[in-house]
Length: 203
Image (cartoon, rainbow, N blue to C red; front, side, top):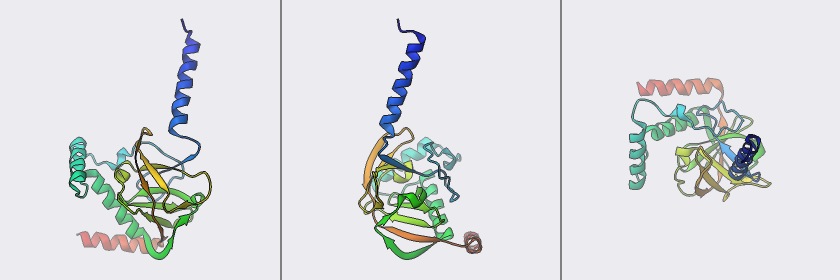
């Protein structure tokens, strides 16, 4: 019979093998820590349940969203609300510029968040944002909001392949990045003014 200590050793070796398989050293993970723009530079692979409103049946909404995808319609439910919130924050807190690059340095990026299934916002350490528009829509990008890419060295560039993953590290589909457009961070006074204007317009 295998002793208790041997069983523990076997369990530990299996756990290490799983971790090594899911998170290879050559892969870099770009994951949103939360839905706010006060980003945490630490990697967080936990599911973002806080974003999913509790005012409806989540399973029913996810089923409806899958049906919408098949029909080529816009997503509904909590995914649609996530998209609307993030796009609003982009427009109220950042100013779009004409500066476009094919590559950015990953060491100067703090975090990222998917705006929809075709745009990813990378937050730079100085507070500005680089919005990458993919050539084609990338299914599950907004829904999972997690992806990995292999980048041994050098910058993150157009045509870089990313792979969407779920909270358990399972790979879904792969997509290709496009160009990066700079969005300058607005001053606090400008942000407050834009948010006030948005609130009045919604009344």
